[in-house]
Picture 1 (spheres, chains in turn purple, yellow):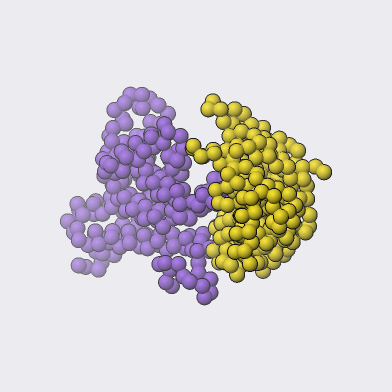
Picture 2 (cartoon, rainbow over the protein chains, first blue to last red):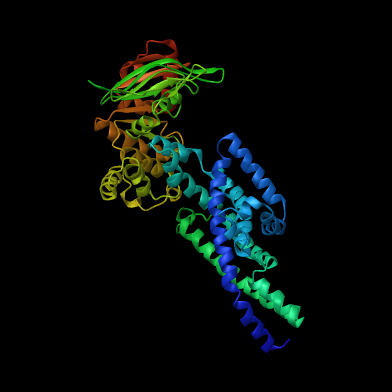
Length: 238
Length: 258
């Protein structure tokens, strides 16, 4: 392995980091919003709940790669889509990737949030109702804050999976970190060095993300932190 | 005297089990009513019907003279006709649960000002000032920034009482407020409740603390099998009950408490 090649490769790959981050953050953000909506529908009336279950079943039960192909190659087959206002977006590989990633993570995310919603103590909800809260206010002030705190550790996993899943976007011509890797390898045939460099970049991104999620968890959960000499919650050793 | 809480012929069934079999109760402003009875007698259900945590199958509820509007469902039971009225009436009552039910993600002070700010739309500054005064009164001023998980049961219950008081309630409803507490913590909560009784607040207390109930209440109600079996001044109900069931119940519990 030569150092100069590694450095050169690293430089080229770093140029793909903005797109990798862009794909990650946008799809995670859109997916999370959709996940909350799906989780609330899933907890609601029967027809909507069944539709959400079906959606989650399909999106979790098929490979993300296949979903991406279906969107990228599939939607252009329909004339009514080509003629719709969405076409300027859907013909772009970037938006196809965002769509596939968001829809996929929303399915996983909704199940994580559903678990969080179920963990909200009924007594906390009853206390809110008896104080005159209902509907959106009850969810905004009491239910979702408690559910999201509960769901955060599992959602952290999902966020990290999503960063890695953006590498699939290279299949639809996007030159993010993995896309650039393939391009360099096809020129140089030096797969080992290039993939090592790409791996280091993903590790670094996910290291920073893990720290950010841990920080968020810490900030959101002062009520779970041990106080001075009192007993520590399970798993909290430091 | 005006009536703070008026219940007329409340009936409530859970499945085939009829828990309330036509209970009427008129609590005048300033009255402290203790509700006693064996478990399963319907006393908690009765209390929970007042803010519609349980919806009675039939019967009327009025708070401060305002009747809760109900409508008939197809199965013959009734349901609240106006959710907004329910929320408003609920915000005019204070309810204290057996298991505190504080909101775990908020500090004590945040718990106390939550409904005044977000339901009653009072200014935050005003709610904080009033909340701090109330916490002072229940002896929790030094714990205003603590989270419920870091408090003892007695402290949590005093914080929950402060949360109920912050609503400026027309009546306070206590559902076995000391039943979940370690014996040595019962006293501090009872002292707070006693203080509120002495202020002349309207209170309904479901409790197993017979000696306390005999002491603070202006009227006692003994429920049996979903009906009021005996009621009257505490001196009568606790010392010289006229019904045999009440006499047995009171004797058993007063002796155990001694």
